[in-house]
Image (cartoon, rainbow, N blue to C red; front, side, top):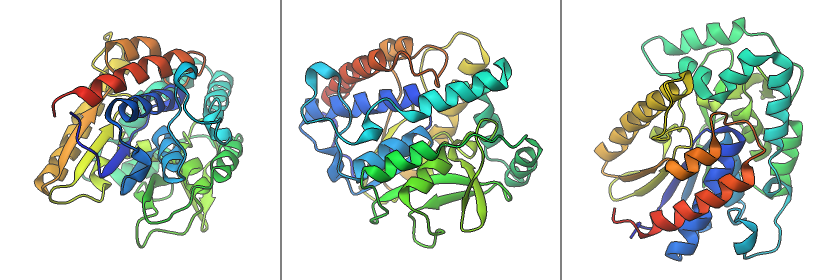
Length: 306
């Protein structure tokens, strides 16, 4: 049986990644009897920031309609505004941006290396500055009641320096949960940077697809990490290469936590979920199908020996 997690880490993956994480967590809850809203910490990056804020606010993960247990929660639980906004922006920017948004470009920018922050900052400065924002996503997150109550961590990248910032962590700049989630989801070639405290912030996946190493974890901490773009399924495209890179990056971060004495369980989409998601993580059309396949996967994960 899956151990009850103390910390849940939720990675980048676009609108379909958000649907997969919601469905998977719902399946885990129903298969294990856990209430994941009671975990000690939630760490979210990009789409994972939406899910993390939802859980920290005390809202249940979204379930497929036939197994929905509670009345419809606040608006962010309805079809994710990230899906329509990202898809529309990518289509206006053209096919190159659409392919990049599917996850390869964030990883190419985000892999840590000596001097990586400087390179990342230079690349960010070279990008055009889009006009579209994710203001609606911010409003939807605020409507859930999500706050930085000590349990929530949201990862973004400061545009000017290329460095990672973990909102909600002691010593981090002040931001509302909605501002931080908006910043963490702001793909810089699709949306305008989010200004917080006079600084501009963009997608947390530019640093890492999960930022697992930021989890507040030590000896005997149980960490559950969901990696929507770490699928085992690939097709020799740039996206499959990005998924391989994502798995490598997350494995290194998991090793760092294990050296602290934490137990880390990582879950990526299985064959059925990956097939439902398809090649584009920002296309929101198959979200209901992804939610259903992820829920079934979650039931299986809950029963696995760890």
